[in-house]
Length: 383
Image (cartoon, rainbow, N blue to C red):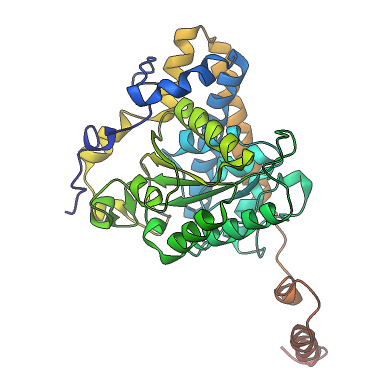
């Protein structure tokens, strides 16, 4: 049995910004001092929205896993355990910001306006990308990237364009734009990520590198990937970097909010390492019992981000009616996903030629014509 060499209750706490302790009590670490004021300014409705976002997407996530097990999806990457890191950062972004997800940022895309069932279409194999990233309804959210790390290059190129077009650092916070790119600890070992950081630092791009360190790159523990905290990698490129408790939605929101404000104002790229944990499998094709132990999972379960936030809200006086309403919304989203995914139409053969190139391309036209001719040759023939 291979287990992580790091003790999740001690080694991951070094230099971490945390506002909520594991039991839901407000206990800021010394590193959190610059960010506490941001949280103090939040009203009950906003704090309850954080909880709602996390709890509802977990219900959807579990339903998606069941759909895959029943043969309705080819694959599913669960986000169980990483909800706080995602919700806090997504809620900190402004509407004009552009989001570059990896492939398990389910709640990020939902917050930005993407229909979660569109993700299921991608995992079912009936669509090229899942949604139209140019549709304003999808909140400037780019498509999932299943090739590790490539989205960091895409995000950096886009952020460079924001600089060139004068869409950042103007002094107008309502107009200035930034980019958020999500990636994991496994992707942090990819060359694409490091190349993206080189260009981001060189061109002073308005972007936030948001690393979700969930401790495992499939079966490889983070202790094998690095001998120092991953936050030091981005700092090594001259990018101001902060390590946060990724299971504390308040820390994620406050630090992301400040980092993005600084990036938009012309301060250049910023980076966050959110120390969290993948409670489930890497994807539904993975069996984590082969490489990690129950003791490790139990230790991280005590830091569950949803349980933590619920305890915090209950201490503030949140009603049982509120939690019941959240549960009902999660059940409704899960039921809607199940009903709609089984009714998704199969793609037509010619759809494979769409969107391969941005503009019409003679090679695609030639191949589409050949396929149409080939299919027509069977018309009227015997089976």
